[in-house]
Length: 234
Image 1 (cartoon, rainbow, N blue to C red):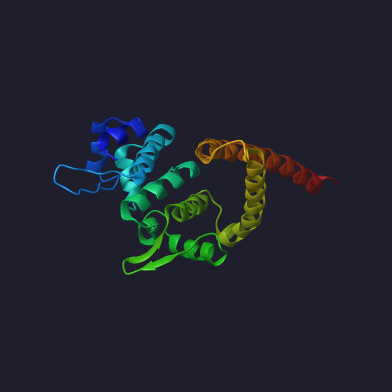
Image 2 (cartoon, one colour):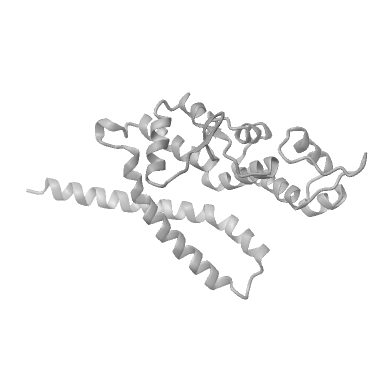
């Protein structure tokens, strides 16, 4: 497709698209001849991903670029943004290669390497060995960052908090995810086309994460008070 078609498909002005190209956030178009540029569906999805990261996660172009380049120091990225960043990395490189080195995480989280290996041993993430060192995908790196922040909050070895206890979440997440996927497919089958279904999921998953988080918070304090009360009763 030509630039005018790309503008129509994305609703983004060509000058803004050129800014994305200058920042190397989207792949270069094919150029069969001088002054001729051909764009594809990967450019459409990459541009829409950038717009959503800007609008929903309030990330600047510089922050998006830093995350795509594997800046382990960048934090504060919600789960709903990680998939978009993964898409951008894949579109730009042509692979799903992991962009974050464990060494860069260790600069801020000294136990990052040990934590990553523990999380890998229980099936939460995969470590990719490369000539440049051990790497993680953006989502996997976020797991390590989160546990690093937990350590800083006091959840560490002296209280017998170690990453291996997180294996409990695998079965819980699988159960909830399977139920959500099954229920969603039952409701939309024959009623919603694939494009609309994708949009619904993109909007709904962050909301349901918040919803489930609130339920967990309520359950935690309810059980905390009940357990503490049972231990202090004469």
